[in-house]
Length: 193
Image (tube, rainbow, N blue to C red; front, side, top):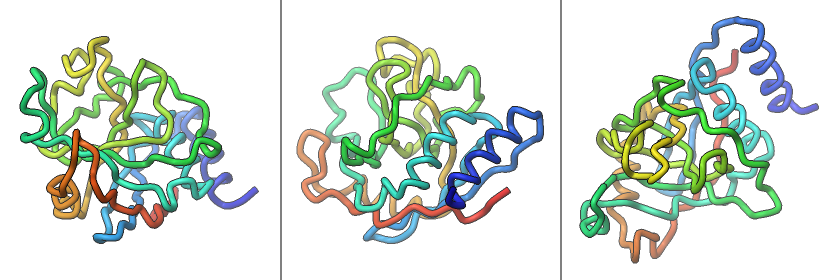
């Protein structure tokens, strides 16, 4: 069992035995520079464990930030958001979908810099995640961005690198997809229990 898998086991063990978890810190290394994020295993344990399993499998290495929502490309939508989306991994590295931990249950709202899981239907999130640019309340539970009203599963926040996030958002896109996706070289855990 490698260190990452052991860490995930310890994370689950300690959570289910009532020991409070402190935030965990990860560095997303991109070709434009690093984005440092903190994760909240005490508030969103299943979502964080899923993200950490992709890290343990090195599945995010070589993935990209590939989609951006901007005021320009959202102009025709009734409910507009601003995010960048990444974490597209090869199909053979996808893990089973996870149950949605809504903002109603976690209390982690989609504020500026918040990290959250992309999804289609409830309980369908796998590897893809997004970062909010500005506050995005329509992504919270009860918000109108998704017709089912469940919102999205927020699980962390950017500590450093929002300048990189905004740079990615400003890159040329067609129908929200970047013409030149931004490489995610590696994501590593910086702080353990």
